[in-house]
Image (cartoon, rainbow over all chains, first blue to last red):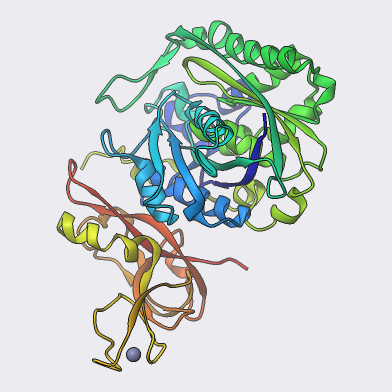
Length: 348
Length: 132
Ligand SMILES: [Zn+2]
């Protein structure tokens, strides 16, 4: 495979709500929730933000970092489960806002939390086949959990954008392989016209998240004949803080390899943004030569695993746009009433 | 706002595309068809303005315009762009007491409103304070 990452960018809204604040409303013990999920607080989109605006900020950061002419982007795919329209693509809004129109192809993707990594794979194929020069893959979400549901503690907002191109002097990291594992598993779903998803409770762990994440990771390691010791970092989809650390351990990765890409404890689960932001956080600090594993998970269910080798180009590029930690640290806390207003939970 | 008008204005609403006069070099935003300085001598070309500027003046809105009721109190500012033109825009992601005249802002992409619950969503620019 001769493709790599030419640039990446992220965006996380500035507002945060603490687990304690949500637990207070529902009469739950905050320490138990925090300990059970390994989550302290989550990001909340402002009243004028949605999946499209978050995607635009991340995409503009990626273009800035890549230093490319957006007119050379031949494809944009946006993965989300909270597209602003049911019918009318988010991808055209983003393509217009980064001035990539009109000579390109674009579409929205849906596969719960892994639609963004599915978009990376599509771009890899198009670039490898020589059909496009650059492809942009975005994962962006403003996730909603029903008030009082366990998901309300983690459902957050954020996005990541990756520009894929042929390996060369421009690429800051090479994608040396990808492997996916997919089955029909109804662990989490949202029916048409319904505002909130439903989930299978305990069922979401073993037969869903772990089975797919572990199978995809092991499949990739087998394909590339690599072991966990060959990797500097490992990033996993992070619906909470606990699942990814447990998956890392099961696969034979240390906490040191998994911790730098784990953002859920401070920003919550950004759904389609989750693996993308985790990967960006690791690229923000990796050294040339480091090998990274990234494994997404989407309910329904499937996982995409990637092995990525950081190249020299990263040193010159990564300071051109805000980093993941810049967004993580720039925050303003809101209380539950303001949160309810921002998320339009109040009936007037 | 009607959908066709919004659609026509997408380049300036999303990307601050104004016009530059090839005769007097002045930059205009929003774009016009005739240079107000050179009249018939003017040669207008599309020009993308830099997304940076400064707060020239501002007011705190307590009685919201339609569709902005959930955002009060919010700041409406005249922003002087680095390229010269001034425009009026909301300052997003701030408490009204954070804003001062002269503050540096960047123009960001946000939801401006919607036609109705099942209508089109309008996107456009707002200012955001650049924190030192
Ligand atoms: Zn003129």
